[in-house]
Length: 369
Image (cartoon, rainbow, N blue to C red; front, top):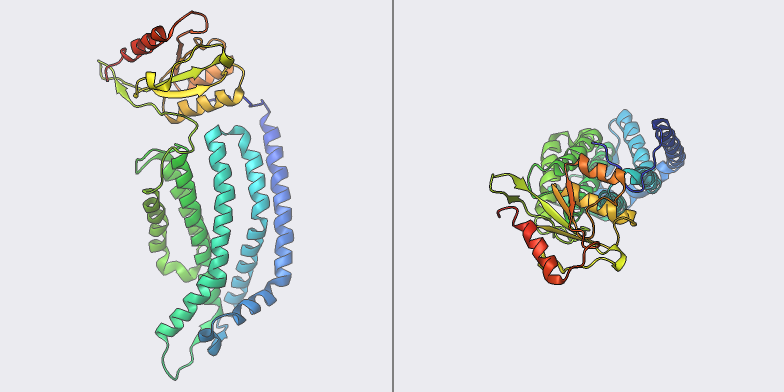
């Protein structure tokens, strides 16, 4: 399927690859600088965090039982801090590179997930390290402590568990935000195996499999199940379609032969020259989208194409014309998604409100609800 958005510019593949290489090089440079900086600062930072642990841990001793494991953990902390430092720049690069080829709802989803997910996820991880994790260590020491015996804490295990839970919190937050925004933007349906929903879950589960530490091997599966279940449970109370550009989505209608149809009516005002009807005139089974001038406004055309694709629209009816004034590339894009264009041509014919309502009623009677 080859789609052309209104603002797309034809560029050779080599140019896209060169842009990707340039952005990746800049990102790797920032990551390298951040890695060197945290390598220089990691020892006092770890010592400061260990000294800030609650009294239950301070009374015991933090011991390094595995020097090689400690080196690995130390570098894991350096990598985690370097990634956190680089995330704002990485988010900017991802948005700049991907936005040109996305539909309006997909572009909005990516922007909100990237900025909101990264921000909330980082705040959650910060809260975990400075309040949640010390509180968990204090509670574990109080509950499992034995009188007269001082506990010993493995430094490697402490940091491995902290790093693993940090990743899990970040991925769970990102999953919840991604699914909630997809629901608000009407990018996915309320089906358990919706393609968009499955992609989000599989991607985040794969990342969780890559980054989970060995200290959490025994609970990897339960945490993976929670990574899927908790965002889905939270999604049940989230509204749907609130951020969608479409005013009313179409409903599937069967004709007399049992064929399924999804129709949408595009109320194009043609910059005020075309007669209009209120949305209440159009049957509820037919989708409704309003635009000032589809021929002149590329953003409105992309919004309409977006609605057609994500609602599987098979018949598009335009109020003012028959679709011929639309750009050829745009009509080809609609044809690629098996959407037929027709129009009422109110701009070329003098009609009153009763005539317009009758023409819409005639279209709705073509199919049997």
